[in-house]
Length: 378
Image (cartoon, rainbow, N blue to C red; front, side):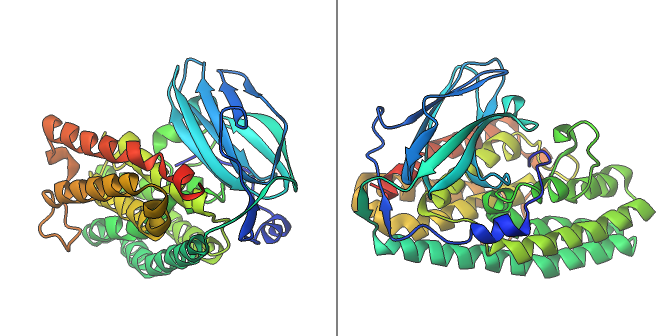
């Protein structure tokens, strides 16, 4: 869920399709090699304007009074890597892979708007290091996974849209949550394009000034709060389907690297922590646990594809991640009719103590998951 960004141009998209080669520059991510990013309420300071291609590490500190988001961006605003919701006075280390070229580092105080930006030039230099071929397979398999999820979403979205256009509120409510699962499993990839997410998945509190509210949550409000759909909602349903078809066509061309997979898995857990556990994501329908499960499944898929390399480089980390994914899965099973269904209880029926239990399980997984990106590129 993010604010409006610039539209990706076709030329820029085509220029970025080439993945990092198997032999890439690599750093040890020591403090002296990292880019230090100091984010404040109105400034974004970086310690360097140029780095060699390959692995890059951002040591981020938020010295401002609001939560911020820090991103590495292509010139057309597609996201290479990001970290959302960095609280005031907190620090975070972000590891990414970048090819030679021009980029920007953006700090977005309050996690809205264009943000404050610094130019970053990535040069072709650096020390070569052979990349484990298992990582190339992981990237290829994950690319297929996100495409499969997008493909599977379209018929479910069509069912939802048809119900809305037919004025069948009950059928639309039933189709709503299933139509979102594929998106929730792969949300960081969808968000990397910048312009699609604000059209289909933005919540009312996250709208920018003057931004028209469209997408799933606008229709969610109509179905659960207004309990009816009119001509405007039927038009918005058509627009949602058109935007999802755009996502389906573009998702297979996303920039995907081992570190973006790992960071994306952590972002999915962050999505759970900031929206699903709090009950803010599905404010009207209370179908948060379906989204919650989708986010966890997407994170686990990325991890499982990277696990062979992670287990080789850090067996203890892989063991801990296996344990915490299993624990969170078992906990979620308590809230659905059977372990193979997505028939979860509505979140308004989940008590405060149960919410804390879910939150604690998410945090227990998020901490080791934050180490995955650096581990797979050791």
